[in-house]
Length: 241
Ligand code: GLN
Image 1: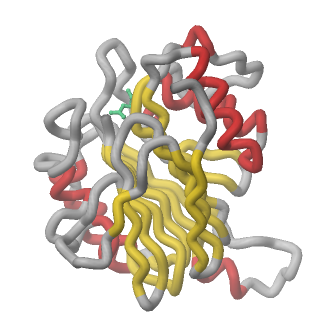
Image 2 (image 1 turned 30 degrees about the vertical axis):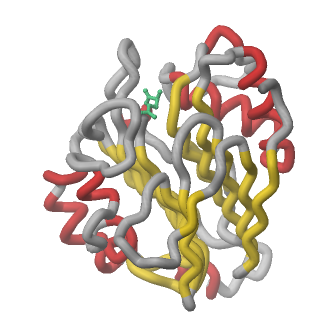
């Protein structure tokens, strides 16, 4: 089970979200606190973000630029990323560290976030690829990439329905999704942990709290979370019991 984190708010540095917190993704790559499946997340990492500079571009029809940096190596040892991440600033970020499921490829393209146009998506969990009726080509053969391709194909507005459908087809699946498009974060809980932190400057969704701040709230299992502006809505997903 991997770990992921999303941010929506004022521009902040990627390092402040991923590397600096005492129990952030960098530390979670070797010492996660709430991980139920797998001990460490050493099989890669990825950061995707919407370029803050892009929002000030003169071309009004263009949204913020999507940028992505992924690796098949452990996050804790990446000194190049650690050097650059303080200079990367964004209003909207999706980041992940990966513990590969047995039999899955270890390659940068298997690390979240996956991308479709203006959407970035991460998956914590496991799913039988045989139940995913996807027609488009996925970024990697890893189950998470095939699931991402199906979610993109169905449209993010149908995320909840898609997760219930996949969870029904594969009762052993764990389907925690985190997605962002620059102005919204969407997430599901289906088999693993997720917490939310409302800060004065924005909202964090994370597989597990990156510090011990008392404002972190746990999201119950089988829920859909939507963050838009500083509004956070949490609704139950209806599915098989
Ligand atoms: N099944 C996915 C993979 O192999 C995700 C694994 C996870 O959540 N640890 O990458």
